[in-house]
Image (cartoon, rainbow, N blue to C red):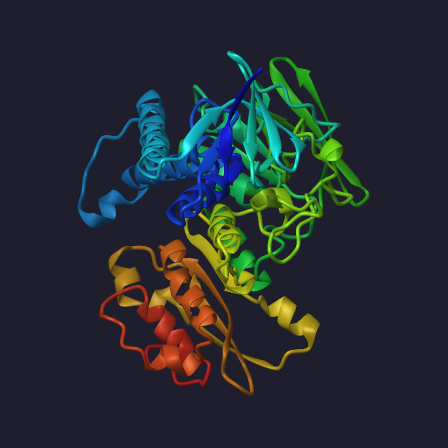
Length: 466
């Protein structure tokens, strides 16, 4: 076994949390190595999650628009689907970004180590790859291994007919019918991709609504929009079993006292993600886990073992790439003696369907549960000039403000470019802005952000255009 020189920090995992932490730590003068078990950097997000799914969402939306709405703009086109070309473009986008991470590592003098890591103790790791084993000595270890898909024991994934999100971004042909188990962001986004490309899509959700952690009014509006696009929803429904019948998959479901069956060509299991802690040696190293398998870390991301830290999906909370990135910056700054911090109340969530759904801060349900006295301002995109010009006037902006202080407590957007617009809400919450601050800020005309200004004005019932 070879033994390397000492490092100030070794990061396990080169996903958004890990590679950002490595870069920030290197910027602050630490000698850094980053271990990644896959051959390309970027983790699930860049390789199999956020990036490839968004590439397919954009491509499939353009295809759908060309088939259904270009004529409204005076554009006549004879459109056909070239799925291999669409997949090739997605792969090119992924490759470009993963190469970009490798370039950033080189620029910041971070050593990239490919292989699987095992923690021996708080100062030692062993990396195993095709070349053998290598020991790394370090002053600090950061666990940033992310998460893996949750599998259902009664719906066994085979990677061919019963698939996860990994396979759903790489299908060779459009299924005639796709059943999606799970009404979260992953299921809704990938269901949307294949619906736009021609599949019949049925979403089965165990709870009584989709996107259960987001604002209830807004998720109901999203469901209605997706139903208009032809996606079928079965809520309060459990998937019981699957069997192959005549070349198809027969899924048996149960809803209250009713049972039924659905035939499909593919079944996508998208019921959530779990922390990736397998074979890291955490138990031997004494790192504490909670009952769900998440690494337990304090407010400064330190585990119970001095010198070992953890961030991202592996410590729980919102399993979002940008949340992990912010934690990566914060933990690196804390290691360097600075005041790293993440305001979790200002972390937005996005569903990249069409229309998009985005939210930041508190939902209306959360404020009611806490007994907070609040006011609501809403503004529909149907009254926004830019949305009308874009032929994308579905949805609304909703702002929740404290009834006494007028401080913005939450912002929720269903509509065009909600993923971009929600940044204004994140900044407002980070800076403790009031709805009056937003209402008094000048927004260019005609633009989509004017809907935010109008919703802020509506908090005091003085919206101009609605």
